[in-house]
Image (cartoon, rainbow, N blue to C red):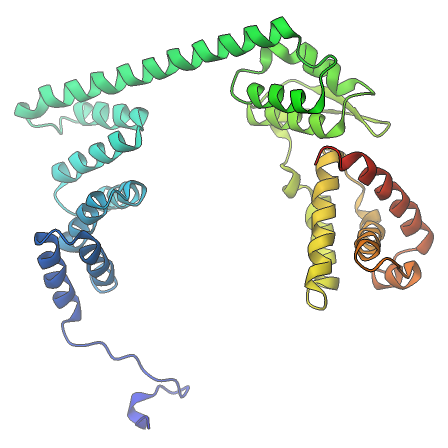
Length: 344
């Protein structure tokens, strides 16, 4: 039975640390490090950081253990934190940091770091040649990577130009073409892309994929696209991602509030439908005044899929939407479903 002295004023049991626990964890961690038990050492140093978060021995022991375990991302982040806070031997830590960057293939960061060291005269005279070699190696690696990327891009661009880009392509061919376009500069293909975005025949799924590539590559010229008999001009660079659009956030929030607690599986179906349709419709989105009716329509469609029958009036009342508006939107959603299944 707990003694009253071992409880705080809220009646919760106090956690009482052993005396000098931090020091004991450090000592044990150093022993494990010396014995090359790096996993045990990392665990002990991680615990010790709860007591001594900026202790030189703790942080250096942990970063060395992480490197030996080949946890390079974690090592990199800890190195950056230590360098920013001035923890540990600066030059020793820089060496570890550069070695970790080399393992991760982050040559640009290596170049930036080494050039900064030279600019600030932080490199000992007897180490300058070594660091100069590392700098030149990293620069060559960057140039080689760029040359290889350029070669691949030119090869892909030539293949696409030779075969034509979108004309007469089946769905599986479209997937392959668009996946290739994600890895090269899309700008030489803007005329063909704009033609496809504005065509009546182009599938809205592929139009969204192409628009996403333009956005990812920060294309800063206006493009016009046509979907579901509507036309819209957009600046890809400034577009929000699908899940950041007002419609997507508000309708998922509203349906979650109405359904998720009582019927999680129904909410999952509703959310899946909203996500799939929003991808097809993007960047078009209904106005905020129509969100309750859309939420009710998605609820009704999901319930129809799961139960086979619905009460449109009852569902409309849940969202305070007009039954007629819900019925009209539900009919539109079913049409969208018919064209979404072959693709998605």
